[in-house]
Image 1 (tube, rainbow over the protein chains, first blue to last red):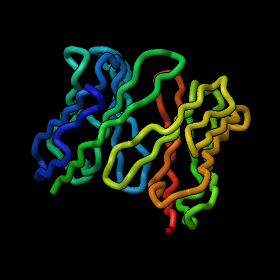
Image 2 (image 1 turned 45 degrees about the vertical axis):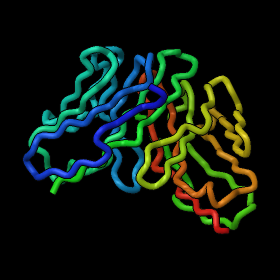
Image 3 (image 1 turned 120 degrees about the vertical axis):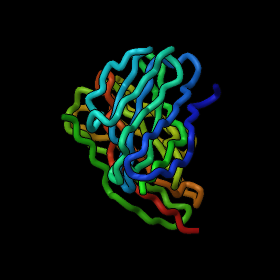
Image 4 (image 1 turned 180 degrees about the vertical axis):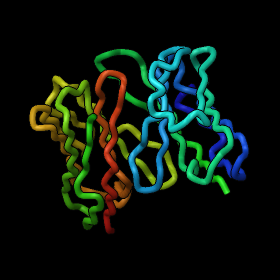
Length: 115
Length: 110
């Protein structure tokens, strides 16, 4: 696609529910990142995919968070047993693996509100 | 761990002024530095990317500089306009990781 696409743009859920957030990166971009952003803060790293595999998941806060990218394109961030503290904007970004640039391109984000 | 700081946290200027936003980082072993703009409720839009071997990059009214050895970058905005009002974030890349500052919120007053 022309840009990084994220769905849904807004998600309101109740505490304890399961949530899936989807990211469709720029076509041909092998690298995909998930970030979380709270109000007034910079993006906080969650997980990085290189192709289909999670190359670095050190930012996932706990085992309630999981992400997949089965075909090396679309990625889904999954949050189990949501808590109020999970409320944030979840941002997805993609980039090419050209070592000289690796310019990051972001989607519009998915705003998650846990009541 | 890389720490990225942006000063000031907020800035308000009258239309037409030239201004400078600052970004500093603690570890000079970076691959590149990228400046972004974020409008309220939106994602990040890439403005400029400076590779580690470069000193500056220009795009229109924007000029970004990089001094890797001192761990600093500046974003210069010439002849500011109300449409420039947004939050500006810098990010440094080391290997596969990007480290972000908390941003400078810019308001340009008509």
